[in-house]
Image 1 (cartoon, rainbow, N blue to C red):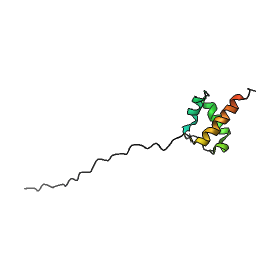
Image 2: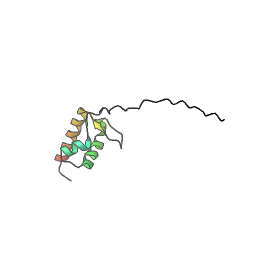
Image 3: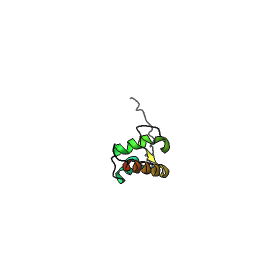
Image 4: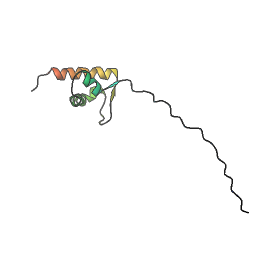
Length: 86
């Protein structure tokens, strides 16, 4: 007769992931551009021009703006739009 090996099985509670918390409360450059009826490409160009004033020098990531940054960007966009094309 052969002996059967006995294995102990422990049950693990299912892992639940918490609901995502929205830490980003501002708006992105593209959202502001759509609101002002400016192309997102032009809005990003203006944002890069004024990156120092906006406190941002990075490139590539989605950029959520604080209320102060939003105001600065909107001011810059409206200034750029009012200038006659050269």
